[in-house]
View 1 (cartoon, helix red, strand yellow):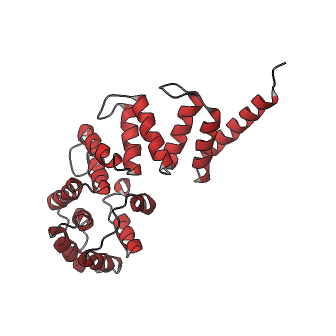
View 2 (cartoon, helix red, strand yellow):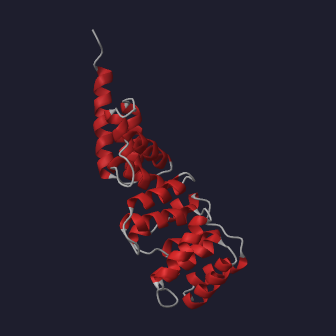
View 3 (cartoon, rainbow, N blue to C red):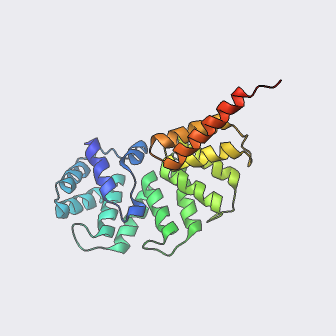
Length: 233
């Protein structure tokens, strides 16, 4: 059932901006559920039996299944299996977030960051991003890094931005890999310049299809090669 649970979580997204990748969500460690009713709900959802899935997620959520709380919330917000119910959806999403489900914390924070279903509040978004990021949620780490870099919802702090970009990069996020590479390329903000490390991060992003990272990798490779060839007399 693991793969099916991951699938339903990905599809139960409020908007494209709130949709997490299956890989990132699987890494969060919350995509598994041993609750039989939650598993049945996942199967019904994947089979297109949305009315049944909604009812089953609700029953499992009422018994405290975090995954069911999250999926039930997303179905209510999306209007799947019945009419949309934003207030009820937000209530169940908050329950999952309060139950320390990192993906629910990230989505709840993203709502406030984007002003989706709630008033935009970057400070509140920062609070939830931090909770999720501290559990290793890669998308939350990237969102937190962006906030520190922009000074949105918190004081601007490039050193903290680098810390969280690097964490997200190590978690496999392509954007974070590129930005981390740029920190090492230029140095500063508590980061020692290291072109070899920068090139490695650009290579990682390029391998995921980032054309700008591929160009940076090629440029640094040539620069490092020239430096090696020019020996002091």
